[in-house]
Length: 486
Image (cartoon, rainbow, N blue to C red; front, top):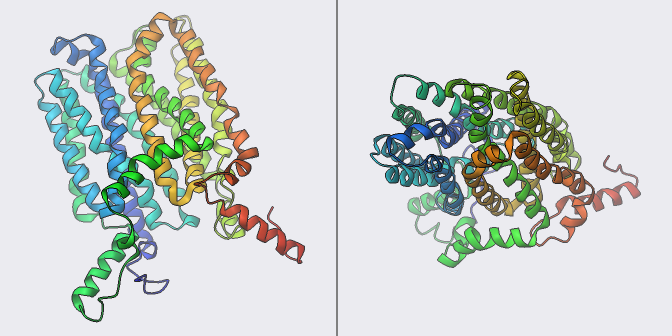
């Protein structure tokens, strides 16, 4: 079997220069910002396009829903596809097609065309979001991955937050609402043109498979028995189908950790996209804001998500020492501190927004400040739980991520459909109370997983639990005169 030519093999992405790694990381982050920006920006134009195409306002809200429905189905293809042919071909093809479908949205002459192209662009756009975590893991060792992972997770929220800010000013200006889509097209096109000549292949199994093919071509006789591990995997139709469709849902049904985290993150993700429809009810309806001014409220969410990323970074500063102490596999529960903080912070932010946003006698900046808490809570919960899933399921984390992405995208797609009606009929305070109580139900989750996670994982069919085996080794070493982990 062909492997790397020693630990310092320059073909190994883990051995690339820091400068090259950061270029690839930043490029991946910018692509993530781009495709998530496209998910939310058109929400600011929903009323104007509904008027132009002579459809009810509720149909206009589908502009966000259809895009996120594409997020539901895309992970079934792009994650496994990158494991089959590599990260680069998948990202190249999906970014090109996604950009072309945005062009279709800018030129659409009816609502049907717009919604179909929104769904298809979302289907292809999810590829960078779905594969970025794997790409970062391809090039960064676990001990130095923290900053890159924190920046990527922040990018997942920066895009949706900046969308309504920029689009709001476009819609409020004298230019056509179509310029929202032209700006998206220019942004997507620029990302694609930069990515195509500069993004290398980073997936090690595919690189090694190409190396084997090269060796066979150079010396057909001497290399005829060489093979790469990637070639020995089951790439039959049923083998791929098992990994892409059956395994994620099998894990979701059998893994209580994955199920509970997925439900929680789906509610949080739905809340984020529900805000795109709730903010106009609060700030346009109660305080007389324009579309552009309402978009600026998302700056608070952006500040909050950035603070959450910063807190998570410093909370993980001790992780390199843990990796060394635990021989590369520290307990996944050490990733839960962010969620322990973020869960109650999110609940506080939701109640604060609802009970100050309902009354016009309360200055607008009071509910606006609550968005910082909401943004920080969402960011901390996502960063913490995504890291926990990776460390818990290791080689099965791609399937865990697929199940998680599909479910949370489905709920994210549904929230904009009923948010306006809920905040209008129940009033802002009671609608927020309902959402806040649901969020409150999940506050104990990270604390329960921190205490009972090892016991639950020990009974799992998919969690390797390497840390539990190492704990036994360290215990034996301590009994023989060594030191035990703190």
